[in-house]
Length: 232
Image (cartoon, rainbow, N blue to C red; front, side):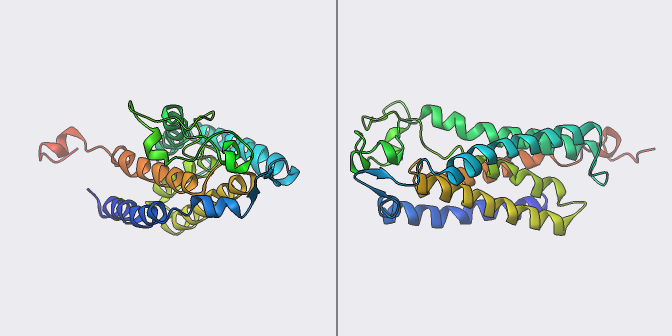
């Protein structure tokens, strides 16, 4: 495994520590109580949050994905190889898909569905609501992890795709994705659409997926080199 991949894998493992600390602290409900009451979430239908930072951000993400698709055939990043540009697109699409796939298996309801916030569901840890023996909280489910935050986190792929040709840009890209992902997570926290942990796990899933997929980002050795024969 190349050094850059080892560092990324180590970072993914290290990130589990604060995630697990947050889980054990049981701070999801207190964080949501900052914005919600028994009457619901006052920011749920706020125009800036629901229209601009929710619907608008999602449309922007798909527009950026379209640019990545065009970049494969009409390079806007000519320093990247075709392999790197293609990987960037495919890894982004995989990141956009992995969170919805997990959500489909989850029976966890959104905060605004809980009885404490004017709904009917009871609060259960989301890990008890995944898998064949999943428990139901009595709500609509399919709310863990945060799909909206993954609209940003899916673009962690850019940090991996850019790191060979543009290492400084790769670091800035990764930082920007992290900031925007957390911002979108805050939007959903304020609206009552997700708990904070939903956003954190969404980011971890997307980043770890890129770590796993990075093996296909490396240039393939030519057969002659693989056999120890000088390539001509």
